[in-house]
Amino acid sequence: MTLERSHEYLLSLLKELVKLPAETEWVEFKHNNAPEGTCEYISALANAAALIGKQSAYEDRVRACYQHCCLKYVNREPMNNTSLRERLNIEEGNSAIASRVIKQTVESGLIRLYDPNANRKAYRYVPFWA
Image (cartoon, rainbow, N blue to C red):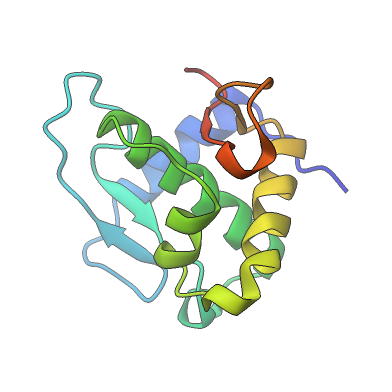
């Protein structure tokens, strides 16, 4: 199952989230001084609390993975299975959950491998636009 979203959809979603008056269980505001300015304000949380009032856990986790990847990219840090597990509070023994979320986000076209020739253990991901 792929989740294809247009550039326009993603921009409208970002604008909608920026308009929120306060943080929620599923949105955490961030300020980032990266020159790129991408993902300057928002980082979605896709843990159990993120599902409150949301229609789909799948979409929430894919969106959270994409936004986490954006934040890592603008901070010049790699996004990988470990960083996503830490972000989503997934226990180390459940790394397959993070792998599945990353796979779904790659399939949706929102993130891609930084180096397709890298060893699987060294996989790092960047946003589709990077």
